[in-house]
Image 1 (cartoon, rainbow, N blue to C red):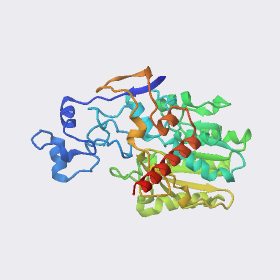
Image 2 (image 1 turned 45 degrees about the horizontal axis):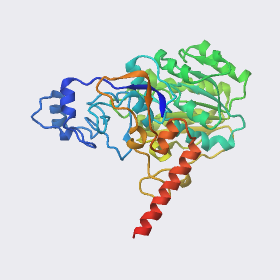
Image 3 (image 1 turned 90 degrees about the vertical axis):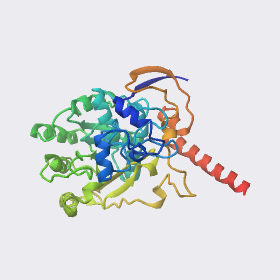
Image 4 (image 1 turned 120 degrees about the vertical axis):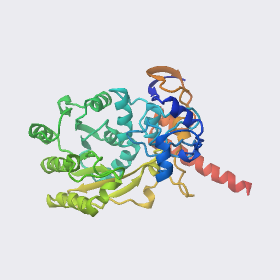
Length: 399
């Protein structure tokens, strides 16, 4: 089938990195690289011990590891293509993050990798929207610290209407603006949320709309368990700006996404402070939901937390029935894999590919059809489940 394909571009690998990559098998990492190949970085890793996700190659039949903002770099990730001698392309990363093929990433080449790695997977946000949807009277959504809009996309999948969004980074904002349309474009804001006049503009949305949900993910670098966390980092206090806007808009729900590391920051005091602040203005705040994206259709082992609060006393918990995909279960299908996500994309080389191309694509599984926009999530899950149980029945007949 002829299709328009965007962002299928791969990053650079140095000649040394290309030589190293040849020795890394699918599912392998730095431990597979022969010791006779000279590399100061590898020498240090061998002495100090390194993460299994360093110098790693993906394997077809498992979900990917967490994509980071540096998923285009060999030394710090496990994102070598399973069979091609290159790192993942931007589009392949987007597929693994569950962004549909129609979602176009704009801005500089380097920024596009950062955008994909930083994003909330839309299918993970879709699950959150589904959990709170029965209790929301007004299916309207405001996205703070919006990034490219993975959270917005997930809520839109459940019929929520985006009313306002703010993103500071100009490259990232280009992507958000291209992929999301608002009834009033003046509420699509590329500016600093800390400015009083910008806060005032955002809060004024309540004069035109009753807001059902305000979502967002304050920058997580300060909370991250990767590297040293600096309590004085100004990015660690941006949740206070988020809080001030919630306090004024008073949405029915707020949804705050972040990395797992926030739970342990300052011995758990940061998360306690966040929850206490929202409770002080009348919100029922649930215990943070700790979610793994692979359980909700995303072909990636990405762990995140969601803090959900509501003006009414509504309990939002993760229940057994919520788990849609699991590795060791006879009740639900297995998680989607790297093969499911990217196996039909064209072969390209190192620092290869173009921003936009007309290509012949076959859609070989339900996930690829979902990403191609041919089926919705409900049909996707129905068919995956039917295939799973048909396979179980066939195996039972063989016994």
